[in-house]
Length: 70
Length: 469
Image (cartoon, rainbow over all chains, first blue to last red):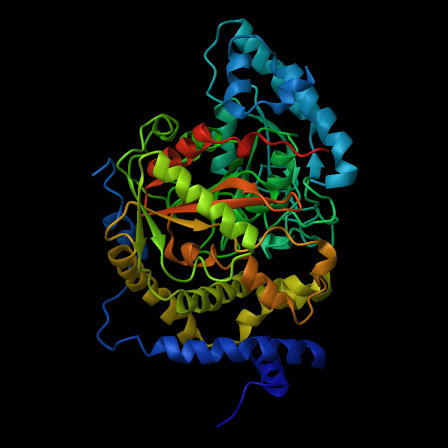
């Protein structure tokens, strides 16, 4: 399995984004990406095939405070 | 009459409307103070003194003629320099936009203007609203009025510092992960981040389509409520703004709080606090108990996951917005800001879509768990107080991500969840730097937050402390 490193960042930048970062920049970015990638993998486990499409703004309305004191 | 500068927004507004003070007089004092303090605090990017005084004269004429004026008539405000004004330069704290003239006016600014507020100028901010410190490589760092060696907090740095220094009576800031609440806490003023869709974002520089929102920084909760009363509500120019009716936020400040239930999270928010912050929070809980509020320990869902997916989604959106400029003007960004935006370019689309799809699920889980037995959550706004600039490697070194995480630890998850939150000053550490607590509510519970925050301020005096500058 490959890994996120300077070469990976440079490749993505060059191919997908049409610019070439310096080695130092690519190295720092790779260091920032590694923990994010590991966490993202973990979080993605809670994503289910049958999840319904999300509508966050509607959820805000639905879950709104009802006001007053109970 | 210098004493006028020490009053809060509602008090000075009352004096202007009854002609005990004139808008011109109040604005002249604000301009003078802005000019005097600019070399030390650097709160402004653009001070519009002539325009402000002209507007103040118009307000005075209207009042003299008995014309109807709005609830902010004659009150000098200034705003983070990312709210567009048609035909005027809005720098967004950046070199790239140093000469950018907007083709439209922000709805929030337009509503403030219609309410009679005086526009004093565009305020210092973190470049493109990225970063919780308050530094800016292009316009100079903003400084904390309580101690100029310390950072004021960002990204709405000039908003917090200028209100704290009693230059102007209120300011708008923007909050994507804590950028209203962090400078409020670090500079010792009130900061209100509304529900994600409560205030129109039309004409606001974008950082993140999903998490950006704007709100007031003020001297008192009642002041913030008055500004929210003016800027909140549906705007057909912002299709994401809520059509839900607004509450009367200022009126809510006068309601009793006895019987309200305030949740104190058992995990996360109270971890790793500075001892002075911990002591201040104990005093806040005691104060609320004396006000008749019921304090309940509550469970909250895991925040570490929320924080990470917030960061992934924010970076994806910011890098999408900035991609062209990252290629065209790579050397015109500050190094730290560039890195924090650029890293979104290297994440797969699936990561972003997971983060956005899970957002609704996390919100439902959060409301069902954290708010199951309480109306509002009480937390420290930050686990620490304002650090010294010299403690910070603002050039973007290895410690920067850790520092960013600590300063915004208690604010980021609330931005991901789109919930409203109010930061209220509640003391000082041994070095004289402000400490603040945060009230977090269900969606659209701003009135309840104002109610609880104002009740605390009616019983305490922290918000009336003025820095010796």
